[in-house]
Image (cartoon, rainbow, N blue to C red; front, side, top):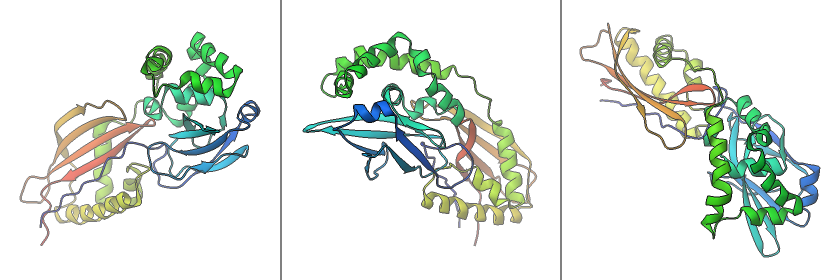
Length: 303
């Protein structure tokens, strides 16, 4: 029976290479608390179906759900028969203060635009928002100083795309371009990570191998990954625990958003199997780390 192992790549993700749940504090600044009086506020995750959390008090504890250093949320705002929504980028294990800066940062950028940064570098970039935007910052802040409703109407573009083109797109493009220029420490080389992965298979180092998995994977994906490692342990034992390999192919994959991805094909060498054995790896770079988002092995035969 031929078994192919496939680990699904997940795009929204996470700073340290472990799977656990995190709780972070989100609180209103005094200025925002006053400005939002009379409004009904709810907070929810942006890209997943999640329950909206009432945010009428000055602070809430938010279940972050993973080791992701930052994630996209939506602040739902209602007053009378009027409704608005404001995107937010919230940071794990940092001071998340909902104020004008938080509203503006979430308007102009989302977590995918800073996905290459570590959690601290992303947070530092957020803190430097006013310096990065200069005059653009002032035009939005002037509206906010009039009232929260004035600001929300100023940036609302659902019915008028010219608002987005003229008011939001220019500073958004500027901020995204600046994010790409933030220097980061290069992650581990692909070939070195492959070598470490194979060595860990041969030594059955489950802790290390699980740490290479996408950190905010679902429980189902974690279970698939774990079971796949057990198959690899048995197969590598059967073919003499090879550690040598050669690169057959590598290529960068085009992505319009999300992490940088790279594809590698390797051939295992000096093994005791009768057939050629190749492995495929899909790497995803995010949060200053390099993860094996997906792998596949051919030539696995069990009776």
